Structures are given as structure tokens and as C-alpha cells.
Image 1 (cartoon, one colour):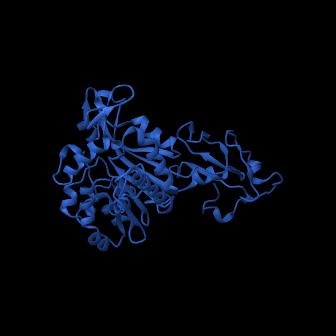
Image 2: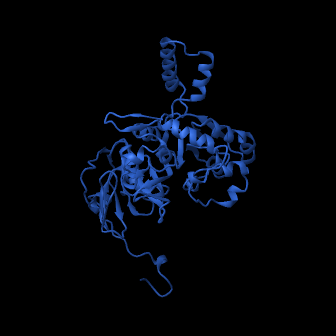
Length: 394
């Protein structure tokens, strides 16, 4: 189950190693594949014991599901997180699970009709790779059953079919998902495919959508000889992202507002001095787009003296910082990462997007109050007596 890289080091056949181990885990529970996780017992008591016993994870990203969400679970396994999410998102939402393992998919699909009806939420499980969310492998298998490969020409036709399928009937369409969740799966993808994987997450997520991922991370880079250990890789150990690298991968893919919402104090495992622990992060999509001047500002409330966001905007505590319309929307979104961190300052005379000029977001400028009020603003206002208490004004 190994080959050779260009540098002469052994290279695991990662997909084969993972598939074999999780196929066995779908039939007999393997304790080494999971960390202790506490889920809401109200959601668990409505699930079949068989699904609960075959669950392998290191966190609970389902707690970030909102009512009405379209939820995508990457590496959905036996369906536990999907069926928890279905109870939260409700009939206005939808839940989709993606997995490559036939045994795990069979377990999840075994209860799909029963639990979808019970929760009133559509739940679907699809076979595919989480680094290629456009290619529906169930449809590829159907094609192969009718068109077996006996020659290179047959192989070329399969490749043409697959590319056409991704274009015309993607397994997960562009900007179709409100929330992506994943539980101890991203680090099972081989390193060469990870940039594409994060690009796929970004592609399918709606503008304003979120990612909630629990995974095993390392406190330092994992040595090569550990990465080439098949048992450690399939056990969510040697393929672990570093803590910094995990956040950086989301940033490089275009996400913003990344936040560590849970980091286990005690490591799950320690191998040759490298600590491996569970970490859950949130990330958001929506900072792409034009920067337009609409005379808006925000006041950072503190407690830090200054803060800098993922676009390089620096906010000074207590100062009216000039921002573009896009950044103003991001900062003031109650459901986003910055909700409640700033005080918004709208102009007295709103500037429509059609009339707005380009805004230079590379300059951290303080907004003059006259830009908000208007240059000719000269109003005089006396205290409103209705605002005074029985003992007079403040």
C-alpha cells in the first residue's frame, strides 16, 4: 500500500488505506478511530443504536446548524451528524451527506427514509470524494455498469463522461449550501488534494455561508516517517494539519473570520513528542466583491487597542474607521463572526450602490464626522424633555 515519491520517500496509497480501515469500522466499532465527544442527548435518543455505535469523530460541528439551513456533511460516515442536523434544520432545510465508503453509505442509507419522515427533513447521501464535490460517483458507477472499460478508448470516453457530468449535473452545485460540517475527515485526504478540497468547499458554499469543522490537529509538523505509517494516517494522526496550518488553509481558499471555537486542552494522542488534539473551527464566506464608498464607518468597541481583519483592515478602539459597503455589511451581520464587536455609523444621507464610487480598502482611514453628517450639517437640537426622568435630566 505504498509507492515512492520523487524524493525517494515512501508514499502511502492514502485512499486505499482509509477505505479499508473505515470499511471494517462500519461493521465492528473501532474505539481507536474516535475521541470522546458529548452530543446533545435529546438528538441522540431518536437515532438507531447501530448508527451511534459506528460513529467516528472528534467534535460536534452539528451545534452550529441553524433552522432552515441546507447542510452538507463531508465524510458523513454512518450518518450520525446528518441525522442530528436534520432535527435542527427542520422541514425548511435539507441535509446532504458525502462519503466514499460503500459500507458506511449503506449504513446511513438504511435508515434514510424512516428518519427523514420522522424529522420532516429531506436527507440524502451521495457517493463522492470531498476534494471533488462535482463528481457524483454513483452516476459514474451506473455508467460503468453499462459501459465497461475494455480499451483505452473506453477509458477516454469515461473521462469525457465524467467531465461532462461535473459541468452539467454537479453532485453539489455552486453556492447551494448554507453550512458545511465535517467531523474528523479533512485530515484523511492526501496532502496533494487538499488545495482542491478547500476550493471545493468555497465553491459550493453560498455567500454568507459558514463552515464548522472538527478535526485532529498537531502542535508541530508531523515527521515524514510518521506520515508514511498507514495505521497512523487512517487513524486521523499522521495526516493532521498543524493548528496554524489548518486556519491558514481556510484563509488561502478565500474564507474569513476563522475562529477556534473549541480546542482540547489535553492531547488525544502523543506520538514521538508530537501532540495531537481535537480542534473545532468556524469560517465564513462572503468577503469577495467590489469595495464601494458609501460614507459608512464602524467604531471598534474594544477591549483590544487595535484589531486587524482578514482583509488587512485595522480598527483602532474608539475611532470611527472608514469602511466600504461590503466590509460594513460583514462587520454588522449579526450571524457573522464580528456581530457585536463594532458600533455601526451610518451616514445621515444614504449613498446607493448605484451612486457609490470605488473605495480604497488598502488605506486605514478615520472617518471625519462631517462625512457622516454632511459638510453643511448645522442642526441645533435641545434635550428632549420626554427623555428626562422625574428628577430632571442627566
